[in-house]
Image (cartoon, rainbow, N blue to C red; front, top):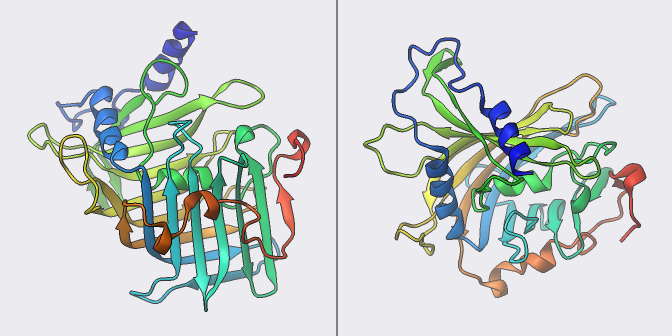
Length: 329
């Protein structure tokens, strides 16, 4: 087993500095262990999180209908609740992401480890629907695509650890050299690929790619992820998240005495693929208030808020696992 995983690492990481030319690649490259340890030190400082958020998004369907919904500048129209699952460091974790308008919920995205489910539902005017799958089957062959992956959304907060060691899941690293993007030269990046076994088949698949900013050796601060690409079981990059405007969580503290940080600006963009139906076109999330001290009286309980049927409206339910479906909770 260990040999096969190390072979996989060699195949995935064989590209090294992935630029059309290595002339401008950095001389200094931090080892994988350092990048992962820095990230995990930050993640370990947050076991529970609550945030008020401002959300805007555009949804669409195959008929050509589209709708843009969102909060005004400075307004709050959503909530994030998160709690780590002590039984499973790599997840799934308790998670609820809610959008509201005029005092009612218009969408609800969640992960419920107690139910073994992940889901999203929305209701806008006379249109709506719910998509739900079993966490144990996430990424299985034959699944219907979910509009947005709640399990992936949790990773945008940078409060769940990356795997370490030589057993799956693993996170091998490559270095991307300077490239020209949007007319400007971008600095090098550390790119970590989150690789895990696909349920049912058991074969290794890449779930997402995490791009960390390269920093010179004299800078000892946390190398922050600035982009995450979510990848389908077929290998398609389905959605990209851009992370920026990192801020400290005042009531948190890492093992080395620093406050933990989270990105307070998250931009999600869908990548269209022929023949692949996509409901969510884009989404913008701004975290306005973030804290990591449990206050269920004011914030709610993530374990309760993440339950699928807790606030489910009367909308059609689409079970995405298809022939793999094991009952209907």
